[in-house]
Length: 378
Length: 128
Ligand SMILES: [Zn+2]
Image (cartoon, rainbow over all chains, first blue to last red; front, top):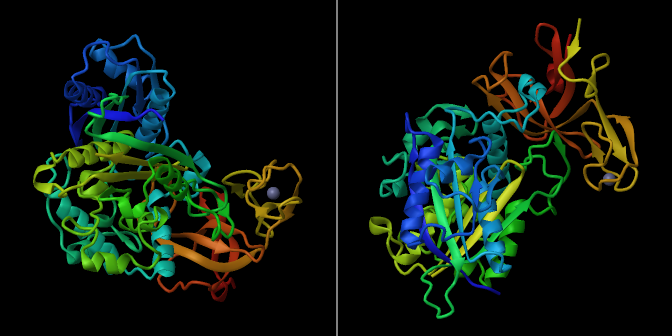
């Protein structure tokens, strides 16, 4: 199989940027990634752009602003996994021999507050059955019931990610919080308090992929980029149906994506040095650990207590600060994780560098349902 | 005058949810669909679902979400029907004393201006 190199990455910080358009942010990330890859004008043959809220031809606007159009530009919507979906398409096209180099980028400018989604029919909003954080809360409650997680564990997860975020200049929140502060923050939907939920926000990320040189000189390669949707059944899955059945034996989309990604990359959970995963809310990250096969159900509290998932620990998770520190610009989210992993695997992560990181995994899951898992190797 | 928030989901008198039963995989579903959501077959028969079940999940919505003009706070959760179907539903507020597995019963709730939808409430609090 053709090996795919990650030749350059770029980022527009995640946060709130009044007066900066979603196109401006895309331009910043794309320019940075192309410069890093040292790609000349016309040096990539296709572009895939992930976004959920940026509207029609969002990717065309970004490349149009740089006079870089002419090649196919495909805009991809896959909810929180939009960037991962774009990455999967780009990787497959290079492996199939269709293109030599492909630009992948994603960006978003989200409204403040609870995300309003065209996914829900108007009657469902009217009836109060379209409340995204309430779904998160029910999922958190179930995880607490079935995996023995406590509200204090949820708070400790937030403390971990916010501590990591202090060292990420591209994150929105760079101030540590204590478990007590998390538990004292406003109760949004029990058991979730405000500090346990990530903020939808703004940002962009870009990645340049190319067929890896035959001489093995690629520093970082994309070992797998897998997108999966849900199987029917789970009432609390990201597909957010109106009903469901016993889902004990129905693998969630994150598990489907992880299994395929591990197989394609020829590695397993124990080979990972660093992980970036979906922490839309504190419980979501702890559930992701199970779904990705990083730990057994019920082991999360011990892992948190031992510091295994914190920087300096056995396998740090969300060293970037995660979405809880960075915020979540949907289309940029998955590619932002990839940017972080690439910097880590190159040893360029500065103060938050995970020593000797060679294999990393990125995971996002959201509306659709869509889940993507990306594995990157140095 | 009662106007259902959406047609075809429930009846008001008596309160009942309108579902379907698949003749192939034998799963119930809600709402009623032309194809079974679990196996995709067209062999689905309309049924009236049980008007009671057990509480499987609950929380309370304290801030009005986008597109919602009714009262807050309101309860939100999942009730598992005897058919094995887990229904996403409003719950009567407050939910502070709710417990996993408690018996719940279906009722109709007014969202304002005569627009009604379904909700579940604890059996013990059942009407006068
Ligand atoms: Zn069926």
